[in-house]
Image 1 (cartoon, rainbow, N blue to C red):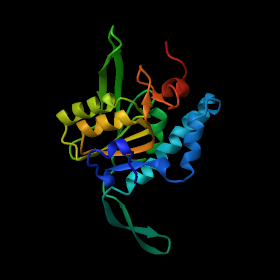
Image 2: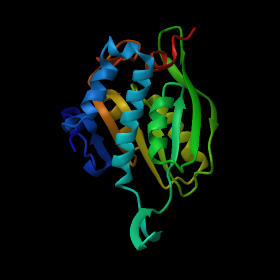
Image 3: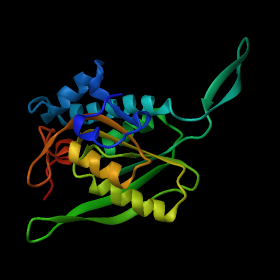
Image 4: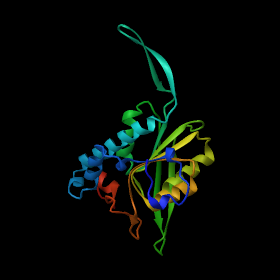
Length: 229
């Protein structure tokens, strides 16, 4: 588990941090296709590659859950198998996060889901604040929450969402997953939510003046579902 140099200035628990593309696996192919300006024009493939990354990170996160031994009756006898003690709650920020969320749901197929509507409200000077319109969630008391956000740019959205949820529920553990994050976004999350676990596909160091990650992959919501007005 590897952390960028800028993140090493402050102590980081490496058990709470994974960057997927620092290991040579087939996940890098999916990340490459998501970034590719030509391939990403195929919306079906773009959504599918997000889903695939979600599945891979779901598998990695599953290693951190608590397990219990259970007996399974087979046609020929009894098999003892360790299975997750409880299913995590899967949360996502609409709309860009839906395909990524589906990847997690493919693996945690018994999990309940939480859906959040949030957007950037831009001020006249170009700055913006995060407005959260709506949160639809099951009871999170004592639960493990996995919050899926395709692009973690400034980190303000996920921090604001988590703070609102933590103000209402006694959440046991929070995992934040993103396909691509900025260094600034990671630092913002760690500064404001020091106990969360981070699961990232890749980290880019730059952002535009409008807070788009560079090189990033563009607008994930538009690429997945079409241009918005």
